[in-house]
Image (cartoon, rainbow, N blue to C red):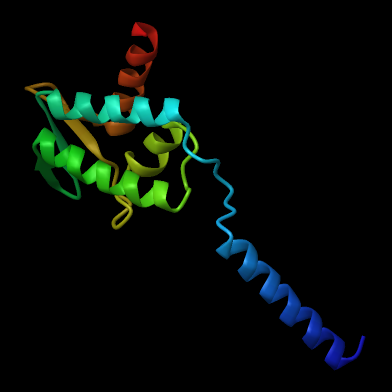
Amino acid sequence: MNRLSRSVILRWTTIACGALAASGVALAAELSGTAQKEITLLLDRIEASNCHFGRNGSWYPPAEARKHLQMKLDYMVKRNMLGSTEEFISKAATASSVSGEAYQIRCGTQAPVASAAWLTAELKRLRTST
């Protein structure tokens, strides 16, 4: 293959990849109505709880926790990065995207727990109650 052919193939490959990315095709599926409802209910439970949210070394009240997780949810949904409630928990609600530090939830005087464990338990309760 000559230099011109390689150049043309590379150019067309780059154009095709760019078109695919621009078309909105993503590895994650679109967030279903069920997942949207479950995530909203999880966020409602966080906000209604007596639990504080540990993020990057500071503790935040429930309303601030919800606001932060809602912001991350909106960002990821807009980019079609989530396909399920479990993906929301693992990709958005488990750790800081800035520091990589795990989020924690502390309810009353109980010891803090990983947000992933707390949210997964709440999701299980939601699913068994409906």
